[in-house]
Image (tube, rainbow, N blue to C red; front, side, top):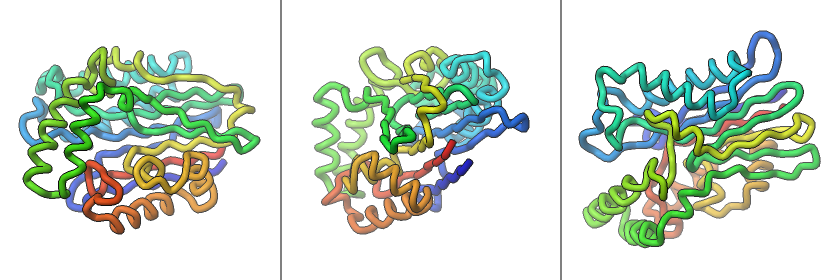
Length: 281
């Protein structure tokens, strides 16, 4: 089995809000992969005493333990239990109903000798490769299906220079519009404090013989495909297979530095936290 992962912050002066782990039980019976992308809140009150890295570490740790110790639970049940466990850790000190309470996107994969299960919630990506080399992206596409006004507001922000006062002001308007759709029926869902969000995840199961390898990427790495258009998901997977996760992260950083103002490739941040896990089963 080959397992590699890489992660680094978008800004070395700020903590990395991504989380990546692989769990391989001592029994040798299967394993699990966990990838989280913490949601950076706007400046101001978030109703919580804890940081996003605190939240992703807690949630990621719970997902790792439950995914391998409770094989009787489905992945949505594992995620719901992990959300509840994490919420209980700060329920008495923090306002978990606050819309900016710490939260994260989720990719969770679990395998044994018979099958490979997967779960994707929000905009991190999972790539599943078969023995024939065909790569299937598993994506939660609700963020791409938001009302047209959201796309218009995003385009207005990205048309302005990075770091400008005008862009900051436009970004606040866009951020508030997106926030109103977070964990809402007509919007999209993340793992925060409500365990019912787990039932909204994209899930599936494949025979173990139909899966040769998987890769999970936060959107800071998915930029290689979705922002910089260097290739499709199959090309991205092939780069991972050949050169490994760190090379993919390095390549994204090179592309970001080549377009520091986002003029050619508009994006919300010049650099974003990046995490990727690659596992050959």
